[in-house]
Image (cartoon, rainbow, N blue to C red; front, side):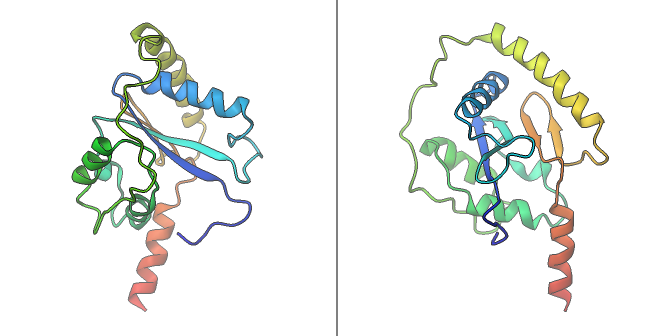
Length: 177
């Protein structure tokens, strides 16, 4: 959005196969933490922010949009996906509420079977889900404003400093001038 600085992080948005949200989040977080590239605590600069996970049956983001959500619309329009074509096409079709949505296609992966599906089944998913729910809801309850946080079976969104309302008001004031 033209607001990044040298100290900014890199927001990642994950679309995960339904029923594997919590396992995938755990594995991605662990891997990026081990590699030393995950944003956490005061370690922000040029690190990956793992704040938004959805499953592939809940691609329509309109249900989490606020009124006049310029930030989310712009975010959808400027993301650079690393997913297969079928998921990207479904994402665009389900988000027609975003004006002129046409997501870049230059980094698309080919259609592939889910990695390690055979290794991590429902048992592991259930345990990781319970653990992550408890942890996330505990943190959410300690936030002064938690409207930017969503924790359910299909969406994990951890924007504890949700700036969409502020951006909307700035946009409205510029439009009315």
